Length: 167
Image (cartoon, rainbow, N blue to C red):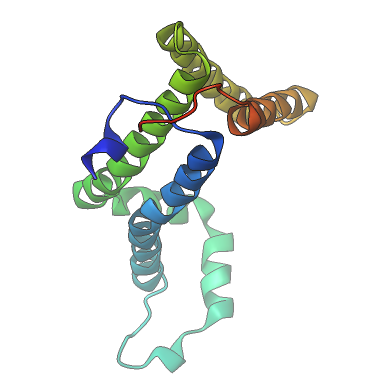
């Protein structure tokens, strides 16, 4: 199990794909925690009586949000307690670590001699592309989405030339 989280060795494109899928499985606890947070917030903000949940009025709840969206956002913001923040971060640490380790191992397989520079460059590119995509809702964002997709396809399908991977 330890080797899956280490930054050593190389992996094939197929293994990289399977690791991407496993990252989704690893993120399930974080998703459950996030859904629990929003469920708890909705129950508190909508003032749902758990003894009589049939008494919940969806239309009144929607009108409450529409009439004062600032109050809704303020209530949401104050609901983020240190408990929720720490719990979400702790549940995401293994996902992020595993994903970065997988990325490094695949880069090592493709660019062994220059792996650190290529890895750093790709990480910077991915972060910059994510920021650009989130900030631009035009053709520039689409170009960076396409570039990220091309990098992913290259990482998946490029033959590394290594007969037996150790990672």
